[in-house]
Length: 494
Image (tube, rainbow, N blue to C red; front, side):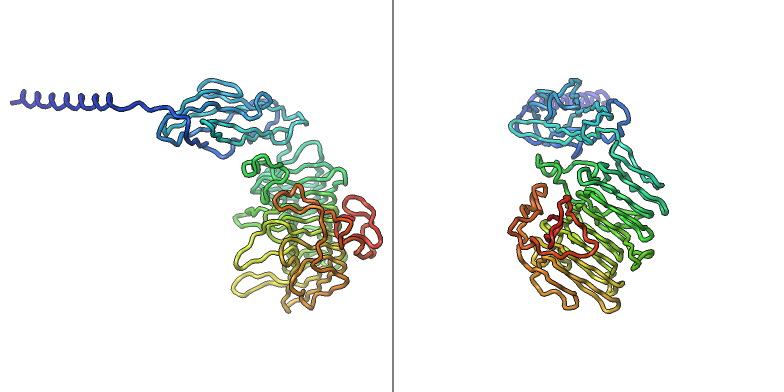
């Protein structure tokens, strides 16, 4: 009986082996296809090592076959070819191009990439870029490759004492930087400051940016992932909100900015777990010098472009701005909220951009308000004094200027010899003199889809020409150093 059971078990096992073997022999072999989709395991192959000496750094990325059949990748290559500082290695083969690589169905393969950069080579760009391209049939799958090139001075979560930044090397701010109370940060002409996406420069003491007409100081984001979104569009356009901004805090004082360019700021960042306003430049309440003739921030001959939120945000602060260009902000180019003390002279504030809008919020080129809503029909307020002379406030919205107040605090807003786009009547309490309404300033170029091409000089036939007013203390030249006529042209350009 026992032998019979063993024999039956043997027959069952043999039958299973034959069945499985037969099934395997009948299964069709997977065919190789040259049509299908690939994916990469990351959206950017980033070499973010700090290159302090010549050397090689290596990163890896997986190419994923999303199909149910084997795919043939005809080539995996670097777009820059022989001129690329990068090298790739696939299945043990190295070079700039690897040909004829198969990848199994629903499988992946590793591509190892290395880069050799001399950080001391000042002719290399700050960010060295290329593209990794995998070709299947007639389709290309592209992955941006980015690496920091030049040696840079990294400011990482630092409390800065008095010091001077120079144009010798780029500066990179990571995890915020703070100018300590009672200390001064001086920034010399030609200095380039790159700020990480989650970071900004907080000023508790004083900031002096001392650019020149021929060699301005530039603040911008520290990565150029913008080409992920814009393909080969000129990278100087950028994406609004690539970094935080400059935050001039309540106890800060004696801040001066001359000939600076702030590009693509205005990201919302975090500080101690709380969000910080999405503004490229923010100036908090002035508790030290309000009304005594000194402004918390004096900014001249400077440009704020393509902010992801507000361009210049005064929150009860004090700002004097002259010969400045502020344009293409997603929210207000200039927002003066919860009171404060402001003078804007000879500025061009141009609202040609796709602005953030909701059912409850509307944004203007300029907003001047003596209160700030905190919710549940509650608000905070403070006295407001805002004086605009010889300014263009224009754009693609129906209304580019807005003023509002509550009676809990005083509000004095003056518009004098300005060119303004405003469909509805401005509030009667706003003081006005010799303004021009709803006449096209005839800018040379306004293209919201190509900020690099925009040109806010005005044509000779512009209604802004020779329509300004001359007043004591006015700058005698425009943002480019061109002498102001009498009467001057309205806006930052003569």
